[in-house]
Length: 411
Ligand SMILES: [Fe+2]
Image 1 (cartoon, rainbow, N blue to C red):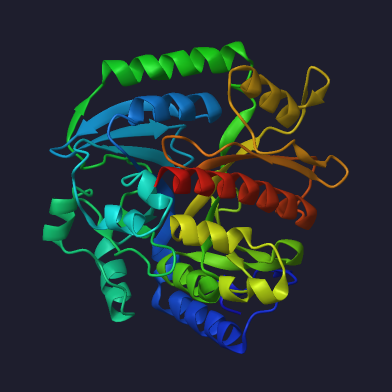
Image 2 (image 1 turned 30 degrees about the horizontal axis):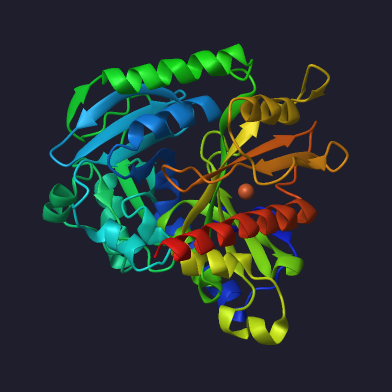
């Protein structure tokens, strides 16, 4: 069997015959032409924020995650702060737009949505994959009708000149980038002049001192998964498109029927540890919004997409298995973060018996992204429990509808 199809399938959500047919055909062909082998893991994640948001956001990320501030790259229209754990997990590139009046394709993706427009430049942009042969990957992807920004567009958008960048997906609005880097070479981003900014450095040191003082520095581990929300009718296309663009495989889908939603998981073919290359999760409503009045079901996922547009909803941080001061590490970490002013959308849910505990933070005021914490116990192999996902989805939906009402009141 083709390597990308040889892994066990999980889940209970039924897919269409079209999905099942093209899952096999796409992955067989991807393996046969060598793309699965040439496209390796995720090297970096790109997030853009509005002017004057990056000091606060770097502070927040350095407190709430294991990331460290490395350097700032300055170009004409952006500051890009490189955050890193180590070279065994992806970097975070936090890009601040300098001019609030700057226009561009990524801003447009926010502006047509009623709540997305509130933070017009703030959005998760996508992932950068390390590839072993950039020329061959780009040529093969072009043959498969994948569209790339040309060099002039990359220059104008101030995207890294040493990468090939796929145009935003019509299904997720995210980009995928490729760059060629031997595994033993450093990651150097062609994003401008390198400086250490004093204000960012201060925000970073303050966050890390607080994190260490709370005893969180050894508990917070790299990113476990990235969860993107898409329109219900785009669920299968978004998954198959991501498998086309990456070397990920289809792990499976779970129906979260009480929330009229499904969770669909893809994982790296090359790295079993999510810390090396996070799982990519797609969440979609089971039914489009216009039949809600007939079904009388909640529809938090579709409501999110209608308010913000298809986009990344949360990034999940692993919490080390074990206990601190007599309680599971995740409970300890959440209580410590609450003690310094961080809000969460619900209590920590799940249990040691079920295998994992999870929680959602309140969405960042800087990026609109939620941080999920997830602690797996012992040798728990599963990715999530359906009960947990239902509760998390419900809590995020309640918070998001309050924010939408708030935005409506201001409009
Ligand atoms: Fe999640």
